[in-house]
Length: 169
Image (cartoon, rainbow, N blue to C red; front, side, top):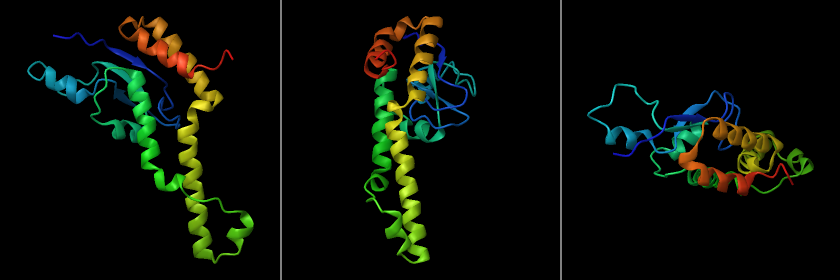
């Protein structure tokens, strides 16, 4: 039987995958449904505190649902792909200048503004890795991994840090 460590990483107020401020849910790097089916005879009701858990918003947690990955880096990159796919239409919204929007009637201008706002939101989720806040998140994860002795995934987290930690540049 595989021993799955009990570790929680992330923030008390934000999603590690997209950066949204939220009261995070716990995303299980190895999905809880997979863990619980492996231990179904011995599982206690509502015993979902097992495994490697990452703070995430409801949207990212639901989008990853039962995606099987054995490490955080795969899950992180899959979450970003799924956000881009979900917001594909919004991201394709063409730019409208304020002058062009003012020329439209009220209903159409409202619709265009809403679409542009959704595009800005989707873009912020996808570009989260380029922000100073994300760099702080990477440093928090690095610190948590050291404190919690995450030897079981140290190579995966190190790859993640090499790919996304730009604070020393």
